[in-house]
Image 1 (cartoon, rainbow, N blue to C red):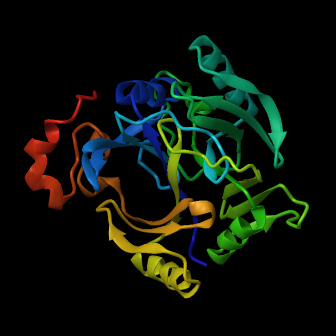
Image 2 (cartoon, rainbow, N blue to C red; image 1 turned 90 degrees about the vertical axis):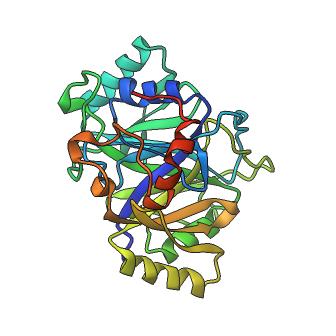
Image 3 (tube, helix red, strand yellow; image 1 turned 180 degrees about the vertical axis):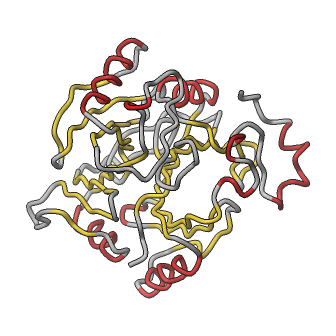
Length: 308
């Protein structure tokens, strides 16, 4: 199969300036693309990642200023899990979070990894996980974070569903490999795509999560190029999963699938990437717009709060 791992996670923020401060000044990620939601151009779409914007390292946010706080429940993308290179890095961030008033929990072991939950200022559910073998990114180490402790990308997303098995089967259809047991008694499991993971949790409550600021809108898996994307689309169509067809997002091409529990799973290409319209050293400094929106730049910029 051609799915190589995670591409990005897209979430919702209400306070875009606080959001920018948290992900750049607390987590030390780089703002690699400052653009707009291509389906609703009155809102920012911000991408935070490693120095190069390597696919699989970026968490993105839609700015929805009138959104309500999410209401937690099942059938949701319930946590985004960032990589750090060592247990010392995990301890460094734990102290950093405490110094900056960031909610954090203790270090635990999950799925064989050292792991620590925390939240951003809007209660976005996040975690750090120790993954010393990963070396596919170029960590940014912003905000005076020592380079040896810097976040190296996104290792996993947690998905909570009412019934575990259908989500496992859906991910296996896309080429995922189940790690460990997955029988009728299993309430959590790991499905791997390359070096990345989807942690699936079963919660049979009737309370379905209601989307809002602090929640994740979708996660994306990655393929190399459009040819590989077409192969995945053919499988998805053959199995009759509702989807968008191929959508050109300028920085990548994507297919959006309505998966188990009405969760949106995107498949995106690694190409062409964020340097298609900005120099590497200047990523995220200016408002970037795809060519079909460039004619509306003056109008779009009227809505945008300046972000430095």
